[in-house]
Image (cartoon, rainbow, N blue to C red; front, side, top):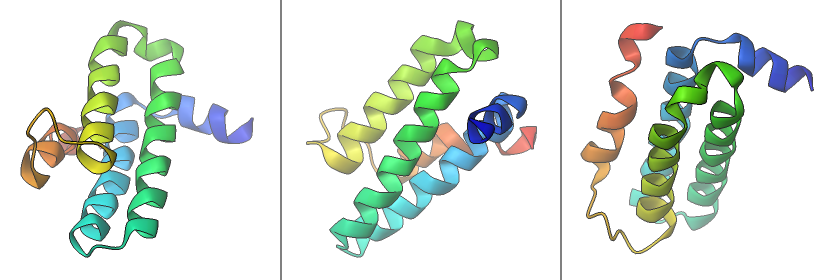
Length: 100
């Protein structure tokens, strides 16, 4: 529970920046063909996105956050039906850097 409260105490910019760090790591290991590490970092990012979606202060951003989650799952774990690449995925998270 402490972890959830600590997460909820962060502004959304910091939450997204932290998620982006995990996404970046997942992409790094995807490109190195290390499926185990890719999966571990992707799962961590997805869990963090879930916490962010459930954070009451982010209620109005639920659809946006859900789309980030769908894109991430599709790109890292799925068939890439959205036709993303490393750069396009990271662009979604890098836009939050100025918030930290």
